[in-house]
Image (cartoon, rainbow, N blue to C red):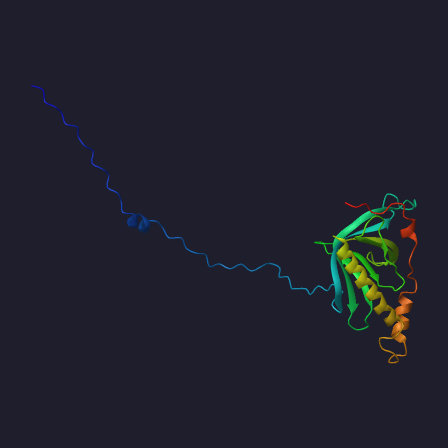
Length: 218
């Protein structure tokens, strides 16, 4: 007689309760160490030079200048080239009320246009465009007065017209300041004489009319 062998069952391993496993694991301790910087830098109050001025208008635009490139320096060969994109702002000084146009390059904040609002400046429409203006002024963006021909292009004709209106209003204000009409008789016209002397060399150039090509529309 053959005896049938019954398969032997292997008993299942007992599972260790998770609570026991968690208790067995070492706890992570949070570090309470503090590290002092080797060099301590003090906060520096950086001034832009505009603290004593108020903004009359600020409009985003693209600025071009007409002149020689570095490669063409001294050759007399002038072309239009882009100087940067940013907000063209007209600023009024809170004390002596003089106005200037200031424009900084976006992100870098580098000054790309900085000149007084002279009443003799004349904005001319760019050839074939109703959203840009061309004019000439003594620019101080590079730290020295340089007679420069500018072209400023806006997003549309409405914004361009808004800039023109604000610029011409600023010119009328500046004319009153130079004539001493802002504070007649108080200082004997000394402030007006000082402002006029500072702007005596500023004249509108005919370079804008002589430019063979205007900055092309994109």
